[in-house]
Length: 391
View 1 (cartoon, rainbow, N blue to C red):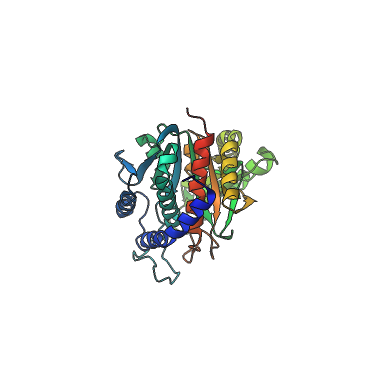
View 2: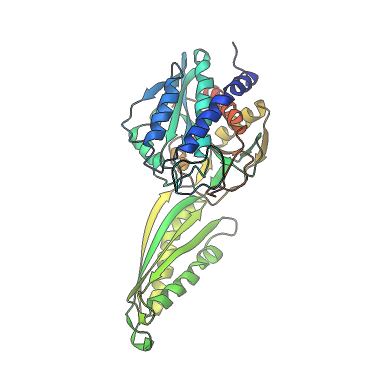
């Protein structure tokens, strides 16, 4: 039987009840980053029900890597889903709400996982006609931005020629995907600035060097990083999210600490900002007679979609009869970007007709998107096998 878009659509439609069952079971039993032990067990079980899929034993504590082998040689295309939940108390009132107090799939990773299991079932059925391999990455700890690095270190990307992934998008309707070549999600970096002053009595500030005043001046000055040091044609965000100092109301403390995040799309901007931030912090502090020290904690680069892989996803979506819109970029981050540093990749928005944004306690999505997503990624994998050159 020839693989066609209609084949995948029809087969995915028949799979829909099973995909709903999988998604709801995951939703009822959420596990946080690096604690996804039962989730891992369940995923392995569902994959083992699909005759012919091989689990790769990579020594992972959580997460699953598996493979579908075609009958003929060719490239290896990876499909990635994330599996972890959030420390959020669910307030949806759904009959399949979380059974774990204070934990919830409030970002839709249960949807991602069920969809890629569906794509795996569709592709395994067509394995005799596939030229190459499909690598299935069920990644832990996306919410902590460490899971992709763990999989890469374990060898999950060895031999992979391209990678495809997604995130549900509540504001897009089912049947619509958001697609964009180039930057889609920002890099994520963290910083800490330690300010050292001189403590003293609140009523005698002239005998002290107040780190609270110094820190406040640094917070204000840091805003010039974007307004006066980043090109107006580029994008960046600098947010100070914690300022901690002192222990009581009438004592000027010796020190203060600022903590926050920087988000950028352009690698060159990301590279420049730490030195600029250090210059500002040290200069402001020195002006007050204090000292400041910057600690820069790099996290993940920007999600940057490869043009060829983006066109493959576009072709797959159109073949599936989906509506394709220009994806709106976001300053949110995703460790899918670490795979894209190794191999060409494309990350898309999958419309789910949701009611709330990600991480909200009433976050929901429309389960009709499960079959749509499974068929799309099966289609895209087949197109990628035919288009991507082996390393």
